[in-house]
Length: 139
Image 1 (cartoon, rainbow, N blue to C red):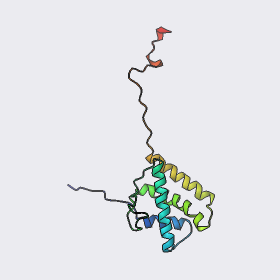
Image 2 (cartoon, rainbow, N blue to C red):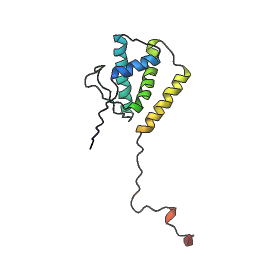
Image 3 (cartoon, helix red, strand yellow):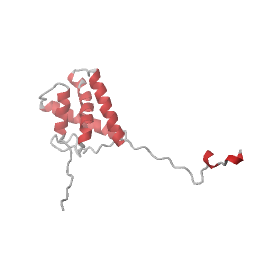
Image 4 (tube, rainbow, N blue to C red):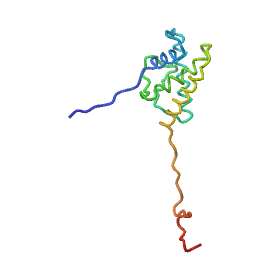
């Protein structure tokens, strides 16, 4: 009997940041840009968490954290995180987002929200009666 244990903990923070910079057209960001990207990534993830969107990001204990730490982001969520981060990095690079980039980032973020948004259930008091309890003959 083979036991498979899923130990995937997502890409490193650096891999996410480099992907976001590539979307911005920057192929080889320097160390300072990478650190700025890490700060932006942490702030974005904290903002999402504050809005109730917890995708499992491994928040660093010491800000801004280490670039080589694993992010704990699932593979399906990486494109949305990279797109959103690239939208945050573009103004710092003195660039504007192309409308198609904005549409793609919004679509990927909406998909991400759909995977993690919890819709609260509605509970009704015991004995609640509505139209369904009336008999046809009581009109």
